[in-house]
Figure 1: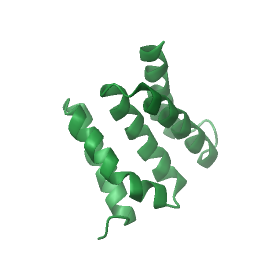
Figure 2 (figure 1 turned 90 degrees about the horizontal axis):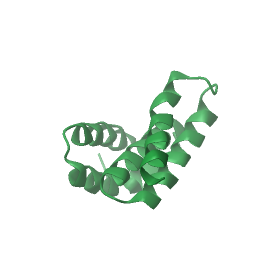
Figure 3 (figure 1 turned 135 degrees about the vertical axis):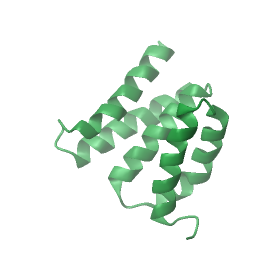
Length: 105
């Protein structure tokens, strides 16, 4: 698998979640940065939305409020576009956006 392979994004996004849940925030952010080229190259908007969600949470937990807000907004917009607008898939992106807005005032 190369650095832009879609499976790398899927596996990496899941590992980012593990890092975040175990309070390894800087490691999660470093992984997000490594995954960004694959995320931007994907044609799968659902996986880009999932990546932007992970990026938002990693950015928020490492003090990158501007990135967190932009990523959370994009995650919600992308997931809304690929779902029916009332999908359970919107729960995580909306939760991240709420957390970013709460933490940044």
